[in-house]
Length: 168
Image (cartoon, rainbow, N blue to C red; front, side, top):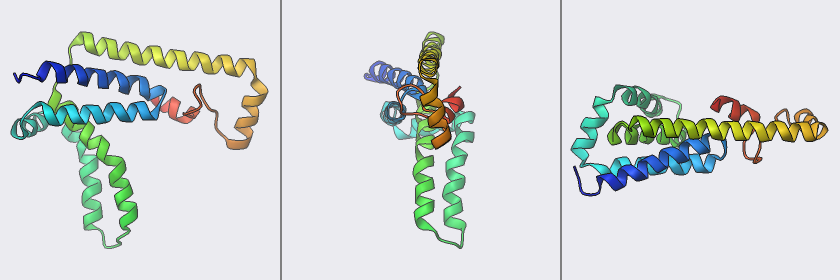
């Protein structure tokens, strides 16, 4: 065990909590959590150990193939729309590095998993409750928003109902 491993694991768990809370409240918080997981995964072990741990985690390897398929599709194609391909890679890169970080860090304890899932349920419940209360307090404004933009903002005004539904 490395000297800094317990501290890095605490940062990784804090990042998981950010991801759980950010899933329903803030895309920025979600992104910060994923970046922290990536950093923790990259600094926790030497490179050889990281690669061994990554390949041993079959679900992470399977999810990461989405990134590699996108990478290969841009290299393989004859139509070179470089801007579109780079944009797609930019979207898929956090997916790959996040899975890499989770695979390298290894499993969390049952208690940590329960805390993280509890935070997700609590955040979802709070956001859903506040959104319903806002709707009940001023249904005309909400219905007007739906008519104009075809979407309904959930609490905090950062996410629409589609993003929130996907998180559920």
